[in-house]
Image (cartoon, rainbow over all chains, first blue to last red; front, side, top):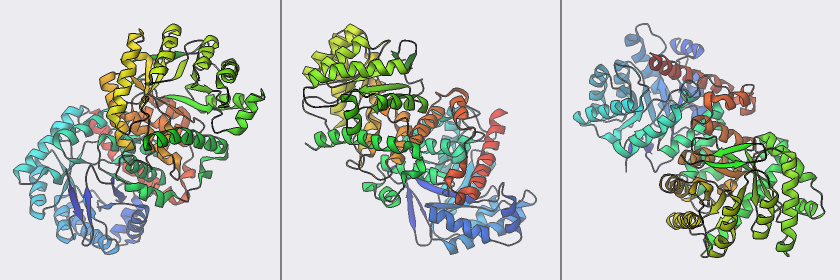
Length: 318
Length: 318
């Protein structure tokens, strides 16, 4: 059974097919957040701190930490800022971190200060990236996110993306890095732009699980890019992709609808023993939110459940 | 490709792996609804009519019609009442109907008056049932729901339930009934009572699709029986079971959360071309319902989506 172990100084988490879905909180990332970027440049980490605490409170399993505030001299500016951000976050929370940067020096600096066993986000199939990142993964003995694109870009052909992932796993092996420390991001296309995006990623995730036996992750919200009510699409995608075998996602744990989908999928996937997490979270849930119009339906839906439930329960018990 | 054709006098619907999920409205059913049962016995069909219209308005693909108001002399009382109910419903709506009864005479009477190509709900693997129902299915050339239990009851072993389904399909073939007119109900156990209920039904549905190549259905709400916030579990189950290959369900279309899960799964499953149904339904959706606390997260989630979405879109377009 594939087990990817990540850890903070005090807490160990296993990413695996038989584990609850690993929610990697995406909020600590200045990309597309001008205000946060300005704060971080100014040495103000109040939003970073509140985002860290809010994501942990919302149920994040890990926190992704990105300090890519500028495209100007990132090689100079990003390493110290990422180090500072990582130190602040690991001071504040006890869950494992993901060191997120496209700058090799920043990842290296981050690995020097991050306690436990952080996840590195990310390496790609690009030769330059493989040569720069894999030695660090080996040296610090940490797992890494492998994004399945290379010099040719992101292929629309899932077989090509599978081949790139396979290449990364094989190159990692050459460095002595086991496949259970490679978490593949098969790259989820926006379903609004490509109608087959869902079907192709479900098939790809199944192949990655069955053939390469690796854990997988993705930038979850990408699937709903450009559509109205994105959270509804995201919440439908989560159970489907978990059913296909995906074991983690970089997502926003502060979205109740998405986290409810994760918790429901864990129950149905058999990774929430005795539905304990679900019951603890929703035992006092008020169905009112569903709208008064649905109240009578609610009652009947319950009856329908009782009828078939009762029959199934009785018969299967005997 | 497996195509199960159902029809009203004026409207034809295809149930299939490449079709939008078929939502069979469960509301017109006095089981567990004392008030509705009393009304129907008294010849008052106002609730039946309003339930029919409400389910069609909510997006039901078909309507299940059950008139099992009493356990006393159902052979005498149910046939005329089911006929009356079917006539009223098909007068009021143009979507296909499902004739739902455990009384053979009632199904026979229902088949006499229902226009188009109704679905018969149901036959089981019980010898007596097979001998009583299959000849009617052949005579009236209609599809039938095949529930995978037999004289021994409902097995907890999915392999046994698969074997019962296989037996029904083979027996139907002996009567000259094609497998595409058999819609198998693999029987979904309550996840709260059996932690493997989800995994076993997903595997079973895949086998039914890949090996028997039949369409499938289930009493959806059964999976959440006994748990708090059942609609959250149901909404997580829908995308997972659709991803496994289920093509229809007997459910309550008046539940917004469950219907949203069906529409999202159709988008992700590639059966909502150009996301047209999704966009038409949710283009004016207000995320306010998600809670003010999530508003900033919403913005960031969007950014995350734009970042990866933008990258994916750019590269994959080039």
